[in-house]
Image (cartoon, rainbow, N blue to C red; front, top):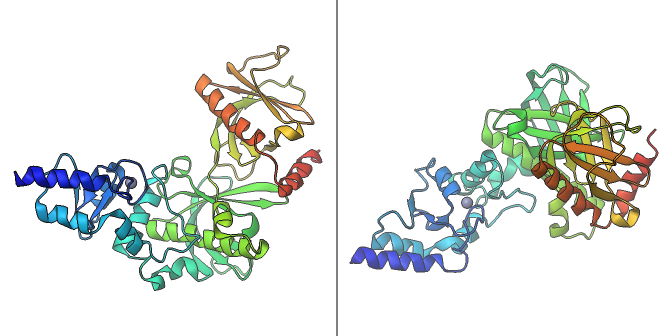
Length: 375
Ligand SMILES: [Zn+2]
């Protein structure tokens, strides 16, 4: 009887505001709980909590037995109170993962919150808050695909991330301006669970580097240090902008990535398979997903500026190609693409459509102008 009563009380707690989403990733309808932390979490996050048993012990809300003392603890804490404590001092630039993010980000978020208590004790935030960070990362060689250990230095004072080829080298191999830097975790593409892609602009074309580190905390610290540097850069560049305006600009995930076939400007060259990355309004293509730089880029403006996306290819198109065509019309020319499957085609069209229906920002006109003047 006691058991039934405690189960009923537990289910009522789940209905309470704050307990209706996962305490860690905000996925709706969590049905697991940490009965030592007093929080409701999703199945995905419960798996991570299980790996830190000294901090968190988990149970299924529906499938496990609950005693009254455990339910009382859940009632006395809950997600809102727990997060008010464990996220009290979270820096505005710190990346809070969602259920769609990679395992590394989700796991390190939970460890940072409950195991290391980084957002209770601000002195623990020094690795990403000091404005300076250096250390070694495994970096993929530009042409041979081999990962080699390289020294990296992130300096907010210099506004740059640099890396060195030789440990005793005086001059960095590359200086990447924070202004144009983007970092995004790409474990599948890089083939390493801690794989981070860093892109930067050099002479207005995009360069990629691929790095990782064995230590998951170190890797996520690098990521948040880059976001901190971006945040402080943008605060100076856009005085008066609110944190809410700036935070979404700190790092971007790609809108969509994958293979398509494309043809050249004369549209008689035949279709070639290329790896495409949609990074906001820049559609870049590569021979290989891990190429250091893009073979070419297509700027996708808005419908007000005469950009259009059409399903299918013009009837005049010749030669062998994948079945599902897409035509992008820009003020200058038509770009023809072919997708292997219909679902791919629909996803790409949706991605292009979204950009085309969004009005252009003043700074995007400068990027567009650059593409127009490219030979
Ligand atoms: Zn979750």
